[in-house]
Length: 310
Image (cartoon, rainbow, N blue to C red):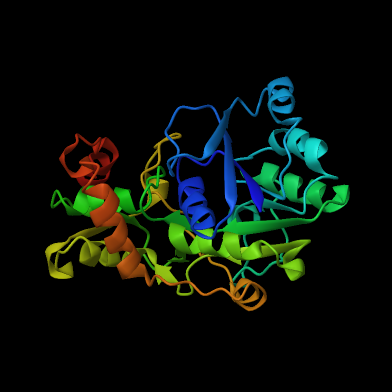
């Protein structure tokens, strides 16, 4: 297939591009050209997707069998792309987020659960609704927390920052809230498995790891992945309600139960996550955290210090 990936040079797009090229597809990237392509020699079309005229002018004469929209956050990001290709593409794959789900007393979240109209990810659900209405062959994936090499969000790195410097790890509450992480390679493999799968058209899939973990357990798993004994690390529990951090984040994850069922993706996409969490965290620690030199960089621990002082 000839495949367009929106973005393609940061996190999801890097892993996905490599898999698709390895499988013999012709991959074209559309991005602003700020970073090099993850695979040498592939075509890049440079432009700003939020400039609708530029997007359409750069892509109007192109033909693609499939499109992966990895970085559309609002409906306004994706709608011009769909308008351009809705009658010309075999499959449109959209990266949404499990963050669209409404907080619930019944877990795990399954596809079809109510969504939160006030979620900061509501633009993604609005985009899913639009794709369903417009009539093109589409599929949406809803990752939970993505981790692994190239992660530009402070998820596992937040823990590594403290572990390698022998600092206490602040944990909100009792640390027993349950969450879920999925390795970037597993997400990209699931996305690639959507291609050519008619059963996937018109469907939404939760994509993540197949095990759940507590917030405290995640701190311990990151410690193990960094090559330290869990006996060496100190966890400091705190009550977030006792602090006024404003918009600053004292912890990188939601302090609530937040995890999904991935049975539908495993069954319909013939897909299985390959990484268990500790192995995946080791992959991230060795191939990204250490290689980037972040272990030697200056990190702002001011919020930690407020918590520890209290």
